[in-house]
Image (cartoon, rainbow, N blue to C red; front, side, top):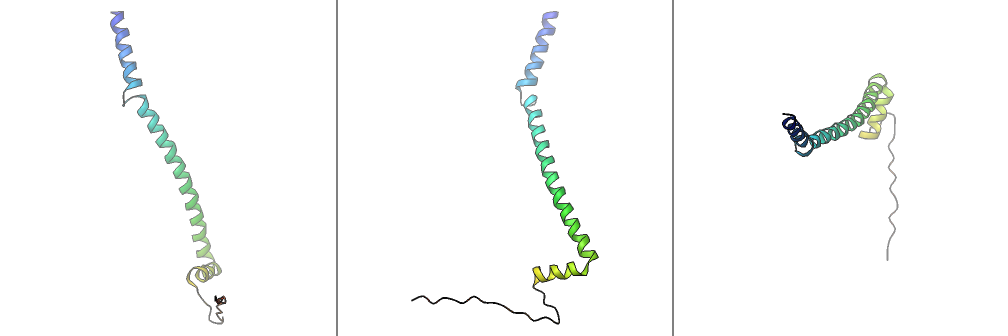
Length: 92
């Protein structure tokens, strides 16, 4: 009877360590969870940065104007736009 129990324990341990549903699957799942946590942390940082930009744009008209100038090329009503064009060098 003791031999049968020992043999059953060995078989169960073998399944735990050497099958695809055993220890290797647990190890792979732990690695996937760690990778997902790292990705979540990066996305959390990005979201916090975007939240700060949104709050700044909502609270400050200067921030919205600055954003319009840099991203959309806005020119104010009492401003003059000057475009500096580099001189093209003639090649012979």
